Structure formats: C-alpha cells, structure tokens
Length: 541
Image 1 (tube, rainbow, N blue to C red):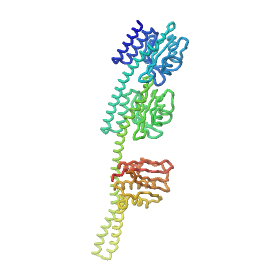
Image 2 (image 1 turned 45 degrees about the horizontal axis):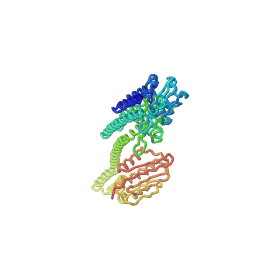
Image 3 (image 1 turned 180 degrees about the horizontal axis):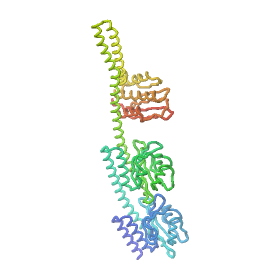
Image 4 (image 1 turned 45 degrees about the vertical axis):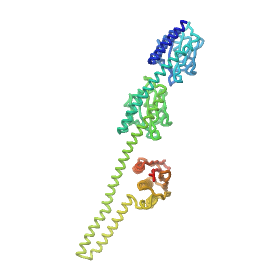
C-alpha cells in the first residue's frame, strides 16, 4: 500500500504542475525525478524524437542527467531501448544479456547500465518521444514497470499538448500580425522592393533562423535574391543573381513546386550549396511562392550548426507563410506593372503625337506652305505677266494634290478608314496588301465596338510588322474568332523564332491588350517560328 500511495502522490504532483500550465521543461524535470525516486532507478530520461533521426534529452535524473546535459542531441540507431521505441512506437526493454549498441548504447555502457526499459510518448496521435528508466549492475527493473511508466507519460503528453496548443495560438497570432503589417504596406502603395524586405524581416522575426531570403525565378537556370536578412550580408545580398546548378532546397522547390529541405553537411553540389557552406549553413529549407498560377520564386530559411535546428513542423510553417505572402507579392507586382504599363502607354501616346507633328511639319505642312507661296506668285504673275501664271498654277495644284495624299496616308496610319467602314477584316486586308510576305487570313466578318476593332487591328498590324522586320519568315497566318464573349486573335509565322517579349513592339501589344482587360501569350522557340495569342473580352450587347 505504501508503494501505491507513493505512486499516487507522485502522479498528483505531476498532474498539479500540468494543470497550472507549467512549462514543459519544468514538467520534464519533475517527471524524471519523480519516476527515478519512485522506482529507485539509477537514471531516468525524457527524450524528444527529431525529424533528422536524432533524439534530444529534454529532461533527466540520476546518472544520466549528471553525464549527459539537457539539450544533448544523439543519433538514433543500433540496439537500445530508445531506438526500438522510435522504430515500433511501442514500449521496449532489454536485460543484462543484451549488449546495447549505437550512440545511445555507448552512453548506457559508459554509465554502467545493465538493464533499461521505456515507454513511448504520444501527442495528438503522433510519436513525440520516449521516457526511459535504467538500472546499473546489481539492480533490477520491476516487471510491471512499463504500465506504471505509461501513467506518467500520459501526463507528460497532456503537458506537451497543452503547451503546443498555447504555442500554436501564439504563433498564429504572430503570423496574423505580421500579415496585417504586410497588407498595410501593400495598401500604402510602397515599392515591391520594400514589400520583399518586409516579408523576410517578418518571417525572420517569426522563426528566428540564421538566414531568411526571398528569391525570384528569373529563368529555368537562374534566380535573383530580392531580399535577405541574416548573419552573412556580405556574402548573400539583395540583387545577387545565382545559377541553379547542382542540388539545393531552392532548386528542388522550383523544380517540383513543393517545399523542400536539404542538409548541407552531406555536401550537395552547386553554387547555392557552396554559398550555404561558406556562410556556415547546416540545414536549409524552401517553399514556393505562387503568383498568378506560376512559380514566382521561393521563400527560404537556413540554420547554422551552433543553433537549435528546426523542429519537424518548420517546413509546413514555411509553406503556410509562403502561401500567405503570395497575395502581397502579387498585389505589389501587379500595381508596379500597371504603373509601368500606364507610363509606357502615356509615353507611346506622346511619341505618336510628336510623330504626327513631325510628319505634318516635314510633309503636308511644307507642301501647303509651298502651295501658298506658289499661288501668291501666280497671283502676282496674273497681274504682271499672264503667260507665267499657268506653270505656277499647275505647280500649286500638284503640291495641293500631293499634300492631300500625304494627309490621307497620315490619317490612315493612325486608323485606316477601311477599318471604320468595313471592320477588322477590311483593316487587316489593307495591312496585308502592303506586305511582301504571303499571309493566310481567317478573320470573322462580325463587327465589334470601335475600341475592340482598333485594338485588334493594332495587335495584328504590329505583329505582322515584327514578322516582316525580324522573323525572316516565308509565310504568316492571321486568325480572329469571336466566341464565348471573347475575341481570340492569333498571328503566327514560320520564321526564326526567339522573339523577345520585352521588346518594344511586343511590350506595346501587351500594354494595349492589358488596357482592355485581355491576356497575351507568346510562343517563340528558337528556330520554331513565333505564335502570338491575344484574347480581348467583348463588352456585353
């Protein structure tokens, strides 16, 4: 009865700690001591399983705690109680006839342990760790030890679950506060660069990693660090372009679109791995940033060897935060792109007006001035010598006719009259009639709103101009079909391909399409020709 009373008293003391919300460290230390004294064991240990197949001592008593300090991390493996529990998730023990092996077995032999037993600690349905008891030579472990240990591990699991719930609530509150601060910056209209810096600053504050970075995927072979915070600013800095050669967490993220983790102590190859090793990084993680359905880049975090390595849920936390900042980045970039597009549209409009002025001044205006002067000379000739008036009037008539022709051509260059009278098909036919490249045409005869017809005309005209100037094509094809409330345009050629979407002509097309809320896609593999696809939403009837 005395033993049972002692056990119940020990359980009550632990339960009281758990009920008042004591820290896990306090609960672990108390449980280890209570179990050790109750069972007269040589040592007891509470151990937490880590995601990298290691185990950390979080609480100890007796010989074990005196030799192995709390916080020590050891690899699993070999024949020993802790590794057996990790493999099976069930209680385990070994007696003096079993020789313990592995790193944990070596520590047991150093402590002269001859028998050991342990029980798993299960938190929220997952194997969290183990509680172990050891006896030295000349002592034995009680045969009913495992069920007695289980009562303590249940209390430990409750304390861990309560603490993790509190930590999770605090983490969610911190993340929401961080996202509110990001949203405020976006709403204030700050530059994308400031948003990028804010993202890494907030995440660095949340997780406390040695290095946090945000990289943008510029191409399948390169990334650019757009923001970074950590201990090696001279080595890793914003603006640094890094090739994606070799293996790295970033390369895996961009290749698969999923979160990734890599251990740099295994010496993976490549430029990013080399930078990580030079900066002292041991473990690196990355999560994808998805913007408008495409992989924009990655959010990364890394830890040094002398730091507490991330727990098992860190990859998930990284992925969740990356998902949450997608919107902030997309909004900031869209606003920046819209501002740039508006600036280009205004610039293009100004340039068009300047060109009209130049054309008027250098062409029609000069001819009209010449006509006026000639008519004045003819007027004087009529008064002084009628025989000279005839040639002057003929010259004035010719200049007036040529001025009229130039003005008509100038007006056609702005918006062809056939477009207004005959629609998109007639306007495109007028463009094709002036080209040397044969063009197959399949354009609907439907009429559309003036702004749709004008924009569609300029898209096709600019695309065909690029075909003639740059594609070295032998043929081209133009298609325009209206269906489902959308006008779909396609201009393709059999030329050299390799068109630059950032070129002046294609950028102008993109801006014009975007101004109407449409979309543009360009497929131009080197040597495979170019195909331009544009979709313009049609206003409701």
